[in-house]
Length: 623
Image 1: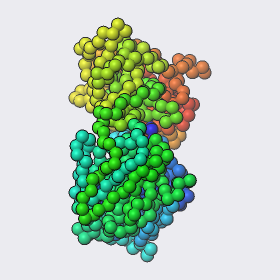
Image 2: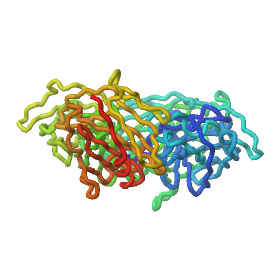
Image 3: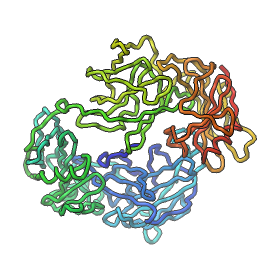
């Protein structure tokens, strides 16, 4: 996936209990399994950055393991009443371990896991004010380790986490899920009149700078500790104004941070911010750069580099008037989104891979741009002659209000017009079956597209049906899931089975009970009627049966990107990781033809393991 900017405030995940809490994840489930071990400060880290929500004090928490960022969340201030401040949990595909990371108050010496194991907390370089952290590893079954499949027979991660003090006694407390506003927040966007509040930003002397809008706080009050029922542990920061600037088309965001408990007092040092080399008085962390301004902090984020953030900071002045009102933004012209011209499009490589999960129609779309890595989405066929690939959002904002977007089209589409602008030519770009693509800039991710053929004539929908996306099938065409210890429904249209392979066990999967054909714009496409996850030698593999999308049971087209395996006649492979499924360690494919279908295997430890499973697989298809 593409890197997420540090300014994005991740979803709130506040702890609901202080003495017995659940780690929070994208699945938000508790779990089973005894604690295996804890890890010292050298192998993991928890970092804090100030929350950037105007009017609300708090933190952005980032969890790292061996230098890699695993996840993050937005939380309120650390409170005396909540010994476990925040938690995160997750598992990588095939690891069979669930990792839980906790952020605690300074008085927490250890965590009691499941009422049995004690895991000590540690001080970490990314944590201020004496905060501590712990990393807990728990065993999970292979079925529980599947991401997003809904196959787990039980919840993931430890069910019970109890904070202990230095004497080994439980620390009683209650968690607050409230992050109160510390005043009234006013929002404006050009051409509305600039809002007024207790803080303001004045810019001057920087060519090409304009403001677009923002948020400002008035009637600033200290953090309401008495109302919440707990004091802040250490310090916290309160953003009192935020302004969105454009510097020669590049968006930047500037804020003023006050002390949350005592807004008029000198704010504490920003934790984990380091001095900027060659720029005395400036500090930075990730995509944030800051300098002191009186008792407050002046902070800038976004932009394409620290040099742009430094340039803006050098031309900004912070105004804090807690007892009166000042304009939130002054000194530079304000412009609206419609005033920013669209930037030129940049090349992106787009490829497709067949979707394997039962009930899925069409493709996974994988887009990559230079050295920014790859992003993917799943799954859909072409329902119009041309449509935005569903991963366009993660390609990032181009400039101001504009977004880059990928368009994928049917073979007969020579150009596309987006939002009524000049048509953009399409090109093949290595896509299969004559499909074409184009990269465009749009203002809305639901942009209307018009497709043209090579003669400049408009191509209409021509009666093609709107197809459901993955997991939105209803009634008889909905996939049915099953897990280890059970079996697929007897009425399934397709079934997978394996025999004769030592150490192989089925973890679960899904099947489609009834099949139908779907009219598509592509010349050929696929639908998956069954998939199963297997465990083999400590690795997880996925097998699937693919049929022709329009005519199930007929001979499906050749799979794109597949090459014959020299040592195994009749078997094909697609090396190089063409898939995007994050739940599988290896994203290449191995496949063989069946009468009227393809049998595919993905994941596993290596190519040899994929070919081994494929040799012992069989499928039955009942149309």
